[in-house]
Image 1 (cartoon, chains in turn orange, blue):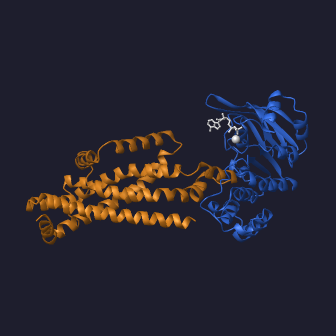
Image 2 (image 1 turned 180 degrees about the vertical axis):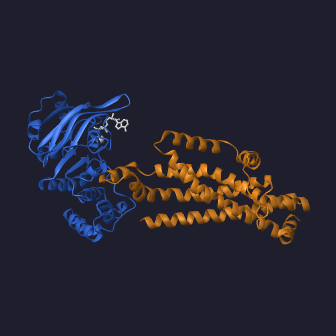
Image 3 (image 1 turned 90 degrees about the vertical axis):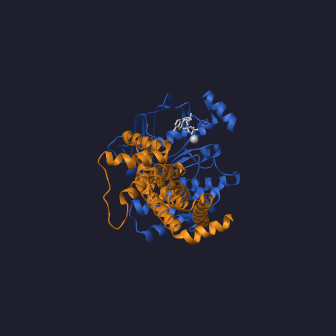
Length: 230
Length: 245
Ligand SMILES: Nc1ncnc2c1ncn2[C@@H]1O[C@H](COP(=O)(O)OP(=O)(O)O)[C@@H](O)[C@H]1O
Ligand SMILES: [Mg+2]
């Protein structure tokens, strides 16, 4: 009975779910890519010798990691327009301002986590590597680029992959501001059919398949990288 | 010690917070001199060596290299570090590069040496330490003794005027110590100026012409090696030698 209903939901409302999943993936990809660029900058600031920059970055990171994503999302969705920041309507992307609020919130949040991933990835490289490079006469930036970063990347990439998987799951909160992600579509089908458990089951399976797929992809890439090293 | 002085240390003091690690040290090193630095652990030997190429910033005092005060803020320390090779206890070969890349990275990127020419030079040097078959190997595939021999020739690629060694054999299994000391001995015979922090008392006595006993942040003895080992005066040196010999 349960699985019959599930099957019915999939055949009849499958396109709702897949469209929701597509939006979830778009949000996750954009958030992690943007979060990576911003996070790299934030990590640099966090490790900077300039004290105000370091404080600023630390405050940002602590704040975004120490408050719920839901609150951050609400702040951006309701708060930004109040201070006069709003995204324009775009004809070919329905609900663009709403969508952008979700993406901005996810990116700013991801930035804080990625900054810590990058910082700890760099700091996990033996300081002796930097010292040896400096002792040969390399400037700090160049030593970073040719010696430290290539080694840090091996620590950072897998963690970035995990961050992507986390963001896929966490992004479900954007449904509360009405972005048509997988969670939002699930709620829609639920309201239409009253098959509450079955709908949640389909959503859970879709989330799981997606995250499982990416997790496996990451550990495969990780093994490849470890292999190349030798 | 007079004559062609290469490196001069004047009133060098280094503190970490409240801890004074080096206390008003003055000495100098002549070109082609081989000097050992011995002393109890925690006595400031590494800090002293690392101050010479400013891996540690001295708290006060001056270091003159080729007559230039490298502690002066206006001095570009990177230029001077090129002329001061350093060998570390933990080897510190670049893990992301094979042996050849480790050796040619600095001359090619810093001195803009032609890569082919750098490779020729690397081959010449690596033959001197008998590891020419390891050019393509990565550090993780080498033994400790091999790593350290590569680290030495990597530093030599820059044609340094002085080589600083910080306990180059302390992280090695006993059977590998000899091969590294052998390379250092040969290097000393070529006339390289060397400052060697070491626990190898035989090396200090036989290879270095002068030995400094660094204890509690000051130079407690500084003498020709034979004299220092044969007729130690300082009671703390006597008890140190009793422990290590
Ligand atoms: N970066 C540092 N910060 C604080 N204390 C340090 C640092 N480096 C060395 N020290 C301290 O300075 C003292 C001398 O250390 P070191 O020069 O390594 O001695 P040695 O090489 O003779 O064993 C030790 O007490 C050590 O704990
Ligand atoms: Mg030491």
